[in-house]
Amino acid sequence: MIRLEALRALVTVAENGNIKDAADRLHRTPSAVSMTLKQIEDRLGGPLFEADRKQTLSGLGQLVYDRSVVLLRDYDRAMEVIATYAGARSGKLRLAAVPSVAVNLIPLALQAFVKQRPGLEIELFDTDSTEVHHLVESGQVDLGFAGRPRDGATLTFSPLFTDPFRLVCRSDTKLATHKQPLAWPDLATQDIIQNEACRGLTSEGFRALAQKSSLSVRNVSSLLAMVQAGMGITLLPALATAALPLGLCALTLADASCFRTVGILTPGNKVQSPLAKAFHSFFSEDLRKRAQALSLKLI
Image (cartoon, rainbow, N blue to C red; front, side, top):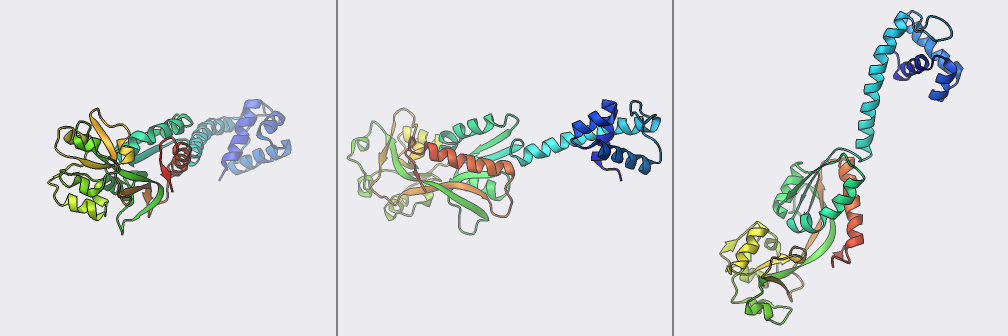
């Protein structure tokens, strides 16, 4: 078998017309290059050049040269692709995130991340926590950004920050002018619209109100539209209330147990790709820099 580096030596000598210049380009000694050419000739059973000066290839040498140029080109390109993938500079990054993270945290982090990797492909799913967990666990995405997974899920959860819940209501209601923070008895006469984000709350005060609820909406845009229409009030994490539609407001709750923990989810039984691993670290660092401006309590 003739090694690729031996063929590279032949191509370099043929293109330079002498062994000395070829040796300089290959960062090898002339004697080492001569020995390599001799080994190829012994393996093939014929001379590669017409004369010792190495200026003209023999018929055999020309055939080997032509095939070697193509082989080395393809090999070098393949190695470049592998190196950029291993170095997290290329490939496809598939993400899933709850709406508040997808809107308020991921865009700026992705902008800076992609700027260093212009050939990157990005796919982002904006959905609720339950679906984020499913997408990560099933391997459909590389990373997820959501709340804690259920017990028994084959997921690895890296907590990032805690996010208190706020009560969202119409700005023109009496409730909007109520003294804050609001206690559960203050909401006794209100109709609660449930959503995926608040389903995990264990507060007894909230559960008592939720038992009377007859409406549940998963999509945040539809949920806020329901509140705007006067169908009731709802609870959302503070990050999700950062840019409420006109006519809605977010009020502080007195119950400190009403919060979610947001983190990064990865498949528990799968090795992260270099790209996913790089964005995992990049996002965490970017969040640390911007946490204070976003009023986030990091873990």
